Image (cartoon, rainbow, N blue to C red; front, side):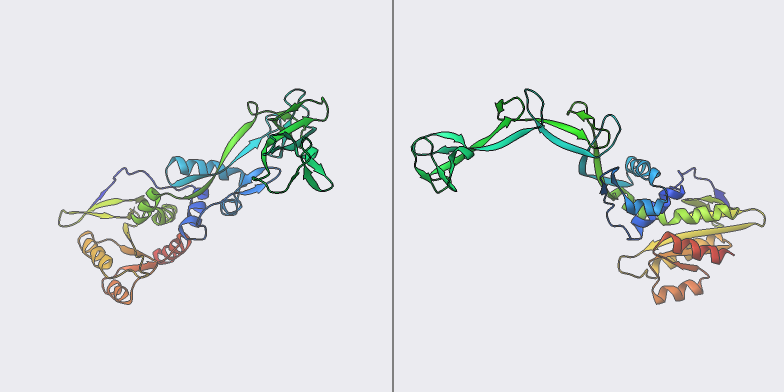
Length: 323
């Protein structure tokens, strides 16, 4: 038997990443959505609860998105103060002439019959709309009269205008800023990407904590691993762990089923490989569980079944069985 080091890249092993991925993989989080805080802006409480350190969450999300593990979808854009970094921003409309936000907004009305146009307040008389030019009462919008747009007047400088100038006001440090000065950041929702789901189907993520466990137990671990059997044929396992003192080889394969139970075929396939390789222990990680017939075959073939739907369950079961 020859133990082959494939040099394959290691799966995500950092504790914070694993905690976050586990929440997405076990279904406790379908979509990671942000929650708005008026002082700090958007954050991700569900991710913070899993990671344990709110300050690390965004960098982890960014890294997993770069690695195409997570798919980011634009949720909002947030304006931050360029002076203090606060997201507590008030939006103001200002006079384009004197920059005062003490302005008054009014509607323009046009009398269809005579063509007279003025501010709506100048048409108001005794709770009715009366044309100041021809004195006719206006009763039906889009028949007697139409809204012709908006008009603004500055209460400070007295000038009138149709389009105000937007301004951002920080309620924390009282700094005003415009569009050019403002810091604007994208906010996303996150879901597992299609690529990550494909990797999950090829067993990468649920096998990762098993790799970490076996490494802590003193094994040299490869995932995936290629072992050469007595016949000379090479066999692929999702994970293989070897320890020299005492000499011990552990192999793990994983099988998943959308139907709720893993059938007998993965058990038979693992038995055929272990018959040639002769490991000390062989485990089949079944997600979420094995069928009754598959359990009987596993027992007959001396294959130890681990039934799990989360990383915690898989790790706890393997830890108990290898000891």
